[in-house]
Amino acid sequence: MPGQNGGGHDTLEAMKRTALVSAFCAIVTCWIAVAPASAAPGHPAQATTKIKRLGRHCTTVHSDIKETSTAVICVYVDINAAGKPRATVTFSTKSGTLREITITTLKLLVNGIAVKVRHNIHRIISSGGTVLAAGWWTGGGTPNMLRTARSGAWNACAYWTGGGRGCTGHRWLYSKPVPLPSK
Image (cartoon, rainbow, N blue to C red):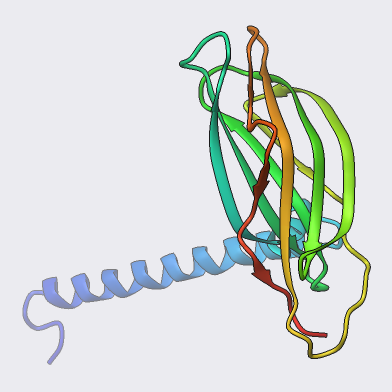
């Protein structure tokens, strides 16, 4: 008969089951509470989960005044949920605060042909990093044709609040080629 052994074993098993069921219920409750907010149209969490950042290629630049100040500049091809690509550049630093960033030319290439180009990009910031992007490409292509995209930045520069500048130089910094979804 259960419970004849002093109740210790059965009581311990019942407590374990209760704790497990309570933990499961708490997890489900948290998931239900958060799910509607992230599913709302235009919610920031939704926008970030639907963009794929592919083909990353980075370089580290050093301040021309303080050699220990470094920034990492990365180029990507972002692809949104509709399969449209855009050229993207990120700037980040762990040493000091960036005050502005510039890119002489940012372009998106599809099959080696520039389809979106922006010149003289300049942004004032006050943080450890930021993202710059060309707009989404709206061009077409031949259905079922293998297409690849690349982003490229010419002379991307980071400027620190304490002075100093670090640039990729007068050369192209390209992302890796990224296959585009077929239409």
